[in-house]
Amino acid sequence: MKRNNTLKLYQHQTETVDFLKANPRAFITSTPGTGKTVSVLETWHQHHTGKMLVISPKSTLEAVWGNDLANFYPETKCGIFNRKPARYTNYILDLLTNHDIVIINIEAVDLVLNHLDIIDAQYSTLVIDEFTSIKNRAAQRSKKVAKLVDHFNYRYFLSGTPTPNGILDIWHPAFLLDGGQRLGGNFYAFRNTVCQPVQKGYHQVFTEWQEIEGAADIVADTLRDITIRHVLEEVTDMPERIYRHMEITMPDKLRKAYEEMQSTAILQLKGKLTTAQQIEAAVRATLKGTYGDIPTHDVVALNKAVLGNKLLQIASGSVYDGDRIGIQLDPHKYELIVDLIKEREHSLVFFIWQHQYNELAKLLTKEKITFEAIHGAVSQKDRGRIVKEFQQGKYQTLLMQPAAAAHGITLTKSTASIWCSPTWNLEHFIQANHRDYRIGQTQRTEVIMVQYKDTIEQRVYESLQTKKNLLDNLLEVLQT
Image (cartoon, rainbow, N blue to C red; front, side, top):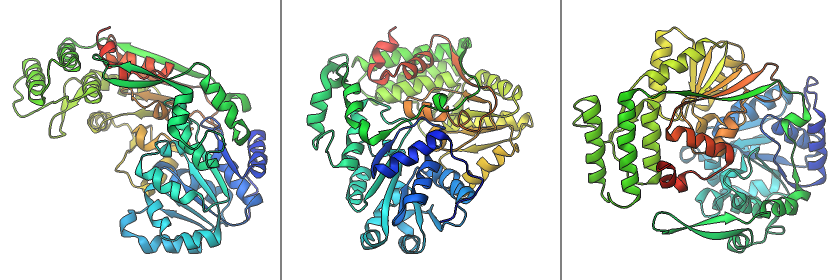
């Protein structure tokens, strides 16, 4: 495989290559933006003895792995599986047989398992990009990957956020990497060693496993010999990065709806509202009394996660009804976000729900602001095109769902990441904020969190920055 002579590795990437060459099974946990993909490709380029299979999130199949291979290793025969697995069993056979590197999404592992004879005969290296996708040992995707790993001599697992919800997340990836050599072969034994049970909830009806002080350091030390990590700010001179909360006052009508929903949520969590019909009646009455007669809109909150999301949706200015139709409650926040977009040459705007995208798209079109969007329904081909065109300066802003575009892609044309609403997912929050803050960025960047004062939005952002599990303590949050 020939390499493009324009590729110049940074010192930390060279160190990573040397580490991987010396360690056939390794974690690469360098922070987002440090160029982990190129480090792996260069290791394979220098040291490969067989073909390589890469399991990657959909958002990085073409936009990261495909682009890096095309730019730096153009003569490599690379096949990308970006189709619906159930319909393309023959296509995966062609990819595995006729390409040096095959890149698939985790949903296609099933198809690869049907061709283990080819894997055993031709492949030596397995890469799992964003290995947090296999952190849950009980998930079907994790079980399928577990059937695959033993067929590879070289295993490289990548993630800039290896333990987004705590050290328990690392057990299963470590088990697949070294067969339980370092953290043991039994999850429950590992959990009992590093955590202690604490009863939680209003009636203390569930158990939360809390990390024992110092356990994370012990786990990190145990895995140190097979882990390489570089921090972006320590390996290159990065422009200034500013995080700021933009607090605004919630309009009176929206505040009324929010407080009614908050009261309903507290009652539900205390067990005083026990049926969907009761919750539906309470919320429908709130919306009807505040925003007019909406007899067909059933906004129902059934559990902690849904209750928390309904509060966040109301604070966003729009909310889903029972038929998944977005009801606009107030445009104030969207208008502010569009003003922020106008003030910047290029920006990223993160939205959580489709109704947020709809409202933003409507306002941006009205203001004649050029934009594109990446969300779950956008194809891999279109994602790659959109990323390329944004980097070329074609769009003033890019609207993105964190779950669909939080990993890997480089969007250094942007100088601001603007959040319409917070996400509960710490990994998505960290990763999304590194789309424009990565190697190649030459300008000062900022993260702007637009939030209503005295709402759950503030507390979710606080929990993200302190790594607290806010959702498990939702009742306490609502009563503070």
